Amino acid sequence: MQIVDKAVNNEKVNRFISAFNSTFYLLRKSNQSLKFVLQGGIDYVHQENVVYMPEELQFQRQRANPGASRFTSTRSRNTNFQGMFIHNVNVKAISFTTSAGAVRLDQSNRVQWFQAEGLPAGTNNPNNGLVQLSFLNNGRYYDEGFVLQEEINWDDKVILNGGIRQDRSSLNGDKKKFYSFPRGSVAVNIANFDFWKLPEVSTFKVRAAYGQTGNPAGYGSIFNSMVPAAIGGSTGFVTPTQLGNPKIDPETATEFEYGVDLGLFNNRVSFELTLYNKKVKNFIDVYN
Image 1 (cartoon, rainbow, N blue to C red):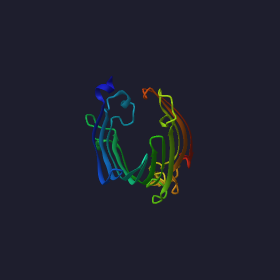
Image 2: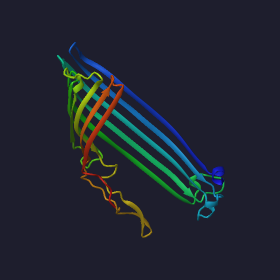
Image 3: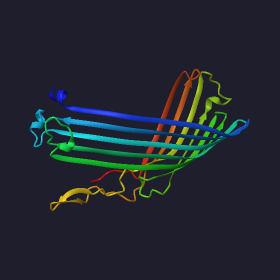
Image 4: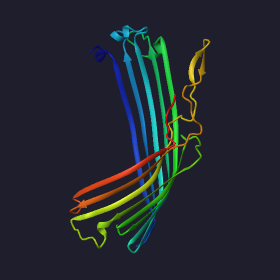
């Protein structure tokens, strides 16, 4: 109860989120169209925290320097932009949709705090403490990618989809290198064929898919972060126990998927069954 009455733990959060979506038609005809879709958004967060433990608290009296406080400020900004050309053309019962574009993601974070122990009575200003500690961490990274895909739809009976994505990230060892991630799928809705004679079953789809995805390493994984230490009475740095890898590649997950979709009575009742096999190459783990 003493902590509830006298301790302080305040948090203030300001957040701004905005997004846009614009479509520009470059060609519009009865059997084909070409459009450019531009999407983007921003998410900005500013958070401030104040923690104060007065010296009269019971657990503070037992410490060498009773009375502690910490002031923390966190700023985070995430932005994303995507531009995509989409061309659709219909040839009798077959529809072809071609998509090509680029994606850019940026993230920056700044965390800083100032902490002190041994505060005089009645004040929570860390600048008045006997033992003072501070921390500052700035991080920024980006991801870029190019996308190309094609979809062929035959009267919703057979749907083929294939594509490839090329990504690079400042989190990888070689931030200029693009990594390729292909994917493809096929779906056959047997219930849409003329030979199907079961009106109660409105959907009977058999599908299969293959795809690869990439996951870059965590921020700072390519560097050796030196550890500050006192050496001979002077401030210095020592080698960390966790070393970075300047040649690190992203994780690559390869997945095969098979499934069946069943819809009854105009899809009022539906069932799905999916089997998949996933393997990860270049698995990223931390060893000390």
